[in-house]
Image 1 (cartoon, helix red, strand yellow):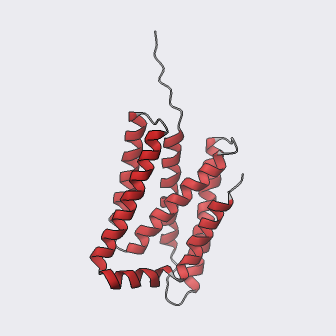
Image 2 (cartoon, helix red, strand yellow):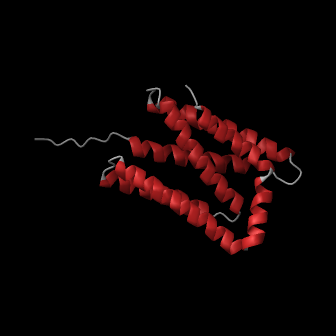
Image 3 (spheres, helix red, strand yellow):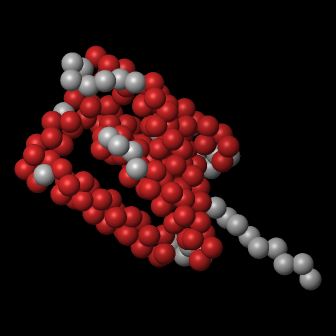
Length: 175
């Protein structure tokens, strides 16, 4: 199985950004105020979601698949939005994108869905463990096993969204 350079670099960005994204978030939040910062993040996320939906619509996703996709997407978004800590929300969304990219790469080689899904989940787990270990060593961050679980949930969310979007569901009509 193979992971593309883009996916690998995005995984590395997630790890490395632990060293500076807290400060960037605090700076922007300080300038805008926390409520407006959270609103900005929500707007950016919804604009990204709108772009994704347009992409899926153009890809010819049927109404049923689009409805299921939107239901799973909104479930993940609402779960993320109800997390108390903003960084955890963003991590869940980042790992969702990482899951999407990883399964896209794995299935791109024509591999079986189960093998590609397991490989992608293990890749996400590896990135998450390295990310949390790195945070454990940073003086102003905290690495936590619970965060590995949150990150993996985000990755599985992204994997499931991708699989829904490419699923080949055929309706069989008995005559």
